[in-house]
Length: 189
Image: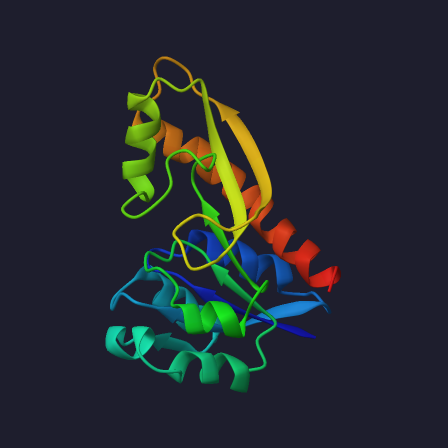
């Protein structure tokens, strides 16, 4: 049985889809949830699903090995960033090289980088006059939204789209594809 750790900063809708996907699986399970935001919705999901959850201390996250050691103690096979808004420190990237993935709500390399998350991404995509948007699932390295692309899926943008309607279209793709890619990565190890 493979162990998945999910890092999230928000409501946790992608985390919930991954938990649901592996609920009756013999392949893997979500065994740890970490968040950098007290009161984030992800903590409600962790409680409901009876998954241990940790509030990340910023100082310890960026200095020291506390979280590397925690993930190693929990025998984590794959680290999944599902709406996690901090850049992952190099010690964690090194310790879990090739085993940390992220989902981004746009087609990278466009509309990525520091500060490009949530509605900021969708506003930028629409302001640029793009005809399509979508998701990028990629490996995590030391730079924001820069690691190797695993999958991109697209959705059309219509003239009447707003950041809110585009967000809903993109979220459909996230919920459809993210659990499947997590499973694919875990079965190809």
